Image (tube, rainbow, N blue to C red; front, side, top):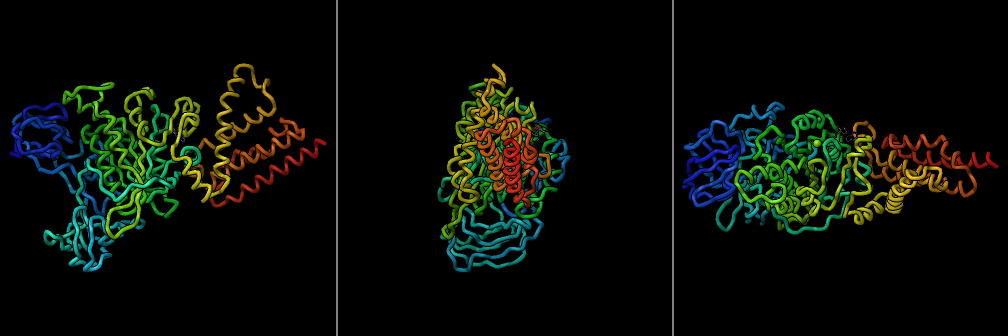
Length: 587
Ligand code: ADP
Ligand code: MG
């Protein structure tokens, strides 16, 4: 039987009996309202079902029907610029995020069935295609060409194909397979909990450039890489995620607002459409999909939301794009998992989280990567980078979600309460954070931007590391106990912190910094250091160096516009001149 009857309701979890033909992970329709649920446990003919909608008014005796299909998303033209909830129901308006506006059980289709797309055939009649091969293209937005691919599992000869205007559900291609003719339209359905296949995973080799100095210069993430941002409340996780969503040089951004306050998604909705992508000159929404499952929406749908998001992300990766996915916050997702596990009365592990927490987190991040995409006739690559915020209670990194995440991700941006308290933003602690991609990314930037880049970067980090012990000395015995060399060193590290690491997300110019500018800024500070050292060796007073007028220009260098990077040479010239001048004056 695929039809059963509710025996018990416990919040978002219900139990139903009589479902002998249903399977774990089947999607079910609950009650006459047809609420959407998913079977998460089967014992005999009794199913435990998580329901993705409010279950008030549902009770024992109500009918449950299994659809026999796993929880899936619809993939095809029309996802970009959209906002969806955790199970891919389109959210048209802001108010819908309040939850109560979501009419239960009423599901409009994720992809518009009315809209006609201009389909351009790519595959030729008679060509032999396999899953992943490109049939044709649709200009989905002014910046993204949507590749229509042969669904996984289908292969054969193209029998019919033609250009034209089509809705997503009409046939664009007929393929003769060994099991008969298969009509292909522009929709692919894919079960969200199953990674989409590819030919081969490759090592990430290029940086995902975020325009955030502390990230790109010191703790870079690769295209196809993984990063986590743990930090206490108010330390800047969401701002970092937003900055990356706005500025990263990804082709596609999938932003999942997961269990956080609704007003943060409201900010996204207000801001993102106004923002212009430096790469295309168009609104960044033209390459973005938003998934909102805020704290006031049903908890089970939150559990699903990151799978919905990553499945969409994989689909765009399969087109050969560089995709970046953000999840804010994976802790809220893990809490949803914990809540469902508790209601199932599973044996709790660490801090009440289920024992499978770590493997779920690992499985999720494993879906990232740079890959050779599927398709016999294709040789291109796509990448999927995943960046997850983690909100450890009280900022305590030893808790299970943070620990499980750090075991799997390759980049750790540790946000620091003290730094955010001092309004040092982004509050990424430069002594605790790390990136395991650094070496590869250094090689890339040295080659593409400036061969001296990595040398400068290492030198700057070494200075910052020395700073903490120097500051300890200052704390104990006072600054006067330091040699002039060490005092100068502290001047420079202060400059590195304030003029380079600090970056104001809300300043028109400072909000984004190209790699070229990052390189020049770092180079400028170190140039000033070297020239000052030289001058001091010639006997110049540290005081005089500290009072140079040009220091103001170094401080303001972060506000030099991207069109005006020649300015950095001028500042360097001024450093030389001013030092020359006081040297001469001193003699
Ligand atoms: P979290 O998500 O960790 O709770 P938020 O990202 O909401 O924290 O950041 C809290 C506040 O910190 C922001 O509203 C903003 O005032 C400030 N902030 C964070 N990052 C920056 C930044 N890069 N530049 C300027 N202000 C920032
Ligand atoms: Mg936040």
